[in-house]
Amino acid sequence: MEQLIIDKQTMIKKIYTDRLIWAGTFLGGPLVAGYLIAENFKVLNEPDKVKKTWIFAILATVIIFGGIFLIPDLEKIPRQLIPLIYTAIAYFIVQHYQGEKIKTYIKDGGLSYKWWRALLIGLIGTVITILPIFGIAYLSDTAKEATITTKTYGIVKHEIAFDKDNIQEKDIDKLADGFIKTTFFDQSVTKYVFVKRIDKNYEISISCNKSVTDSPEALNPFIQLHKDIQTMYPDNKIIFNLVVDNLDNIVKKIE
Image (cartoon, rainbow, N blue to C red; front, side):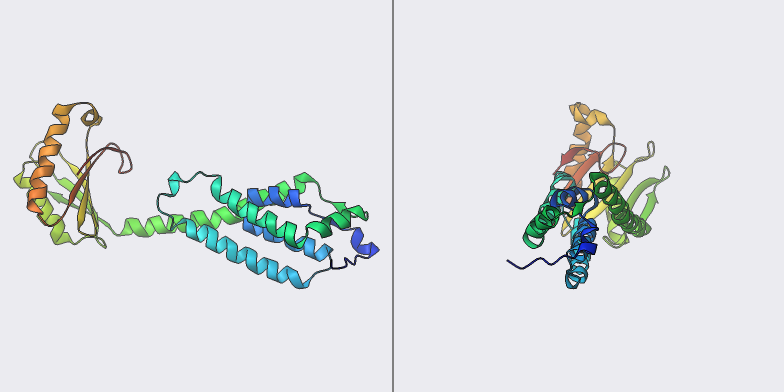
């Protein structure tokens, strides 16, 4: 085993135990793990490994939190799973590169930090990591909203909202013409529709009353409307999402 050389002046410095690093990492993420492990390398007289630790910590942060935006159905993944994974990886790294050295350091009279310090660093790391993520998410949503266009039709101004980068306006006009011919777009009550194209499929979200979930009489007109619109698009699959209050609250799907 590599000889651990520590002078008396170094022994005055405190070190983070594996458990403190585990707790700090779980709270604050890979950046906190990088900081705690790098600080240990300084105390253990291994300055050449400090820079490498920071590089790996920054790369891990970018990969993990950048990849979050690419994971489909992220809301279905347990919230604790991702922190547990990167915390376990950090713990393994500490055990492999520092485990025995930390034990020797403390056995020879070296001191370790208290729990509150690791937890405080973890909380600070959370703020440093989360703020940029919220910023990116906000900018992404803002950019997305900028491409959403709404067109109105008829006397009562029925609304069709769509992403102009996703579907062409002429296709929306064709769909609106179908809604007019089927009398869904009538002259009494304003209807609100959001249209999204997925490959050859048209996903049409229609704002409705929650009564469609338990009343066949309320649902039947939408079933018939779906059949009529599907007839207009023999080469495309039409999907109706009946929504209440917002697009994410789908109470009924008709395919």
